[in-house]
Length: 186
Image (tube, rainbow, N blue to C red; front, side, top):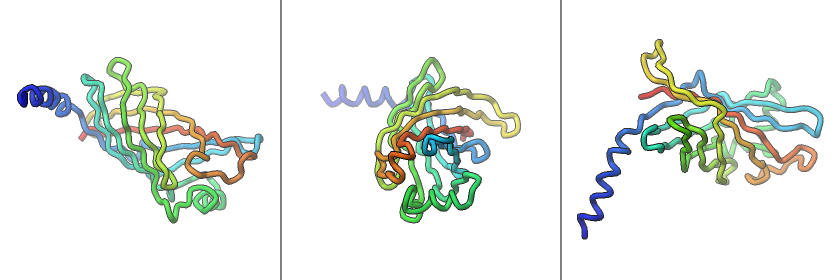
């Protein structure tokens, strides 16, 4: 009986060994957000410091990602607005200096990542988020002499779900996320 339990585990090991590991490329990885401001205009910003590790296996159609966002790296083009967003009304960056996305599943169409499902921790609360790929590609980077994979991913979240209720209902609850990410194969 013990042999029957071990055999499936041994068969699964090669699939895990095949996963390629990638480190995010800081020059090509950003998290953008946009929200409608009181029904008037769209406010946009981005986080300039995003770091993470990704592993995926195209053949096995599996993957893992752990992406960290430095909340203090926010950039909206307005220093005063950045400071407001970092404060108690929104990101509470002094108490919660980092947002974290940890994948639970990679979804593939053929060899390409179609979506990544996972959990987003923001303001000390964790909730599921699905990042849909707008595009995904891998290529051989001639300068680095390594494979680079990445793409553009989008999601919509309800900020109140993480306890960010300032300005509701005037400032809408829906926040659109755009993640541009490239990872260099290690």
